[in-house]
Length: 193
Image 1 (spheres, rainbow, N blue to C red):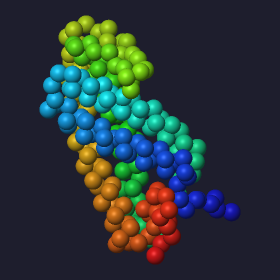
Image 2: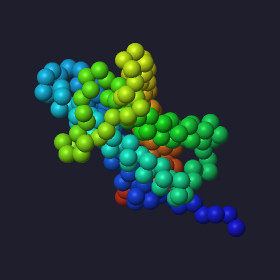
Image 3: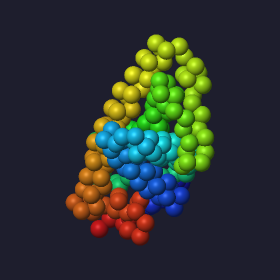
């Protein structure tokens, strides 16, 4: 007998998806906005950016664990091989983004010459990555430069991926009418129309 796939993501998967998505969008905005601020406003924006980032990192590991232990809905039967590959690749890239962006941000903070401590949500002290924080100045600067390039590249790539993901979800909802969007949106039907 063939294993049964659910027709929708679980409530936990939906909450994690939408919470992480909202936090990433807010953090992308904060990331772009921080450069235009000065003084205490910039410091506060950086602390908030780091708070969102580390929270996304933690929630992303929870989401990955949930995904590995709970079967996702199957893709629509009429979906072609390229679309199936694109869906799978997009999910993999999103996990790389959700984990890679906060990790590279943490590396940046840990190697910064400014040596500013992180206080998540103005409450929880978050440590630097000790092995990176303790590097001599020259290698530390090199690591910071590499992490900065990766972090910014992920921000641009992530923004494009989000736009592509939203466009694909809307295509499935309004052109294909195959119920794909309803698998992740509460109260929206996941049945093909």
